[in-house]
Length: 101
Image (cartoon, rainbow, N blue to C red; front, side, top):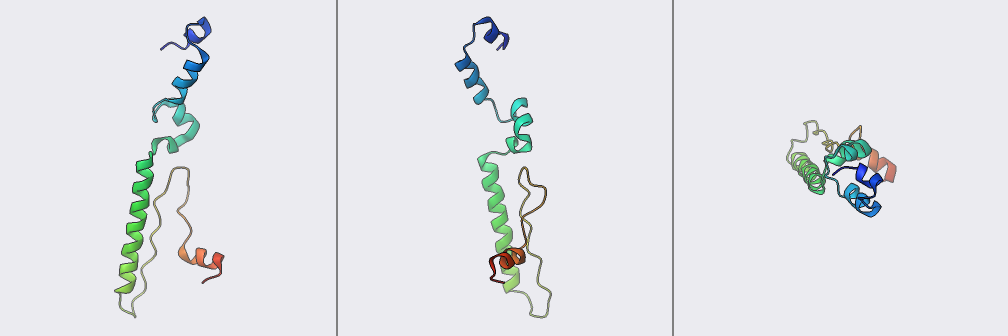
């Protein structure tokens, strides 16, 4: 596909817009516009959420089955998502914000 065809009148603006809208996720334009977020699909986001939930349930299991004298295990950090620089807030920060802790 030659983009000069648009200037030559052989490629309509509508067709050019459709081609740009349906570029693959790893196209240079998508990477330039959206950064690493363009590399993550819906499946990737869902898998990251599943991993976060699994880590939390393992943490809960460890909390319930630990000796009372032992230090509690640290709450797991969620996986870093595209565009995030730091993991999400700690449970204590959320509880303090909501006024429940």
